[in-house]
Amino acid sequence: MSARDQVDRHVERWLPVLPDLDPDIEGAVTRMQFLTRHLRTVKQRVLATLDLQGHEYDTLHALAGRGGRAAPSDLARDLAMAPASVTARVDTLARRGFVRRIPSAVDRRRVDVELTDAGRAAWRGAMDVRGAEEHRLLAALDPEQRRLLADLLRRVVLVAERPAD
Image (cartoon, rainbow, N blue to C red; front, side, top):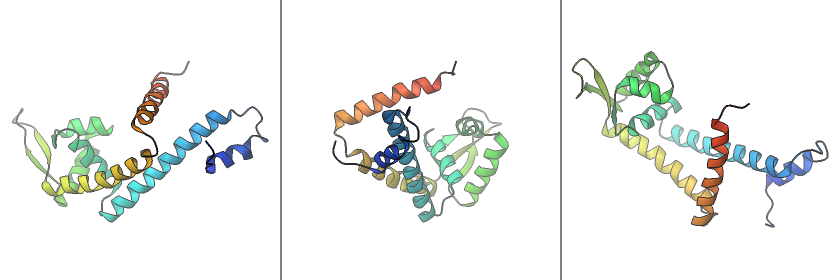
């Protein structure tokens, strides 16, 4: 490929300093870091536009991922948080009209959290903008290349999921 990006210049700068540097590994990792930062910036910008905090979006997202209704304990697990912290988040989202507490259909002693129309709209608004940017970036690849990229990254993630020796 003839087009050069900022990472190519980064690798060129570091090769004389670190002669053992593998330019392919450095290039891949630095590009993944760049893309992660880029997508995080897009997320922060869209959340600011929608007047949503990151933790509010994350909670709405976890709730949407459970069909729009879940027990607080399930949200706590999904978000890897203490249940008391989720309760505080739900309180804030309820005050904003994004969620409501409703009796559990499974256990009368339990209360579930449910997305309201406003909460679903806020979540979808952020998702749509984030998704559009992801599609814009990956449109640089044809469908076969996108599948190959996803498969290659899966192989790397599987190694990362295993404990190091």
